[in-house]
Length: 161
Image (cartoon, rainbow, N blue to C red; front, side, top):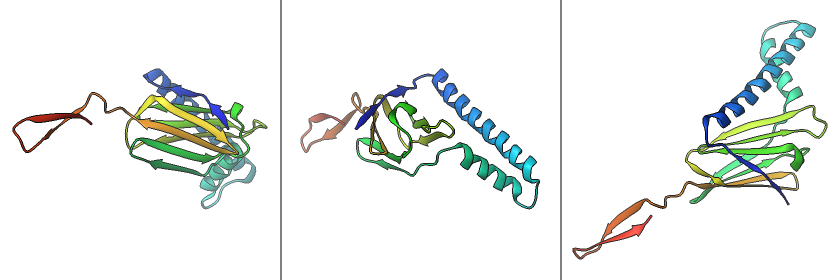
């Protein structure tokens, strides 16, 4: 099992860097799709076919599973063909991003998982084990939030949520 460093994104600059990377990949796919169009011409549905072929040529698709537990979001992604040195995980308060490059360097992985809740970016871990990337993102602390619960008597008890 190999530990993967997780980049914490806590400001707009980090989000912009991710967006720039995604836009760059989209531009590369667009250029490849146009090249396919120039080679083959057009026809009914050809533009979509060219785009999908360009995506297949340039990107790595992974099977993934995102599960929510009481305390965390757990991501598992099959990243066969990518090794730890070619993978990067980023975490913002509401999303996880995985970037990678195939060993030969010709295809890239860039995927983002929007989370239905908030996470603590400083408590995200990532491990690569036999071609499976496992990312655990702890939900944001509820420490500091307090819940009042009343007993049968007139006094109130304060319990940490």
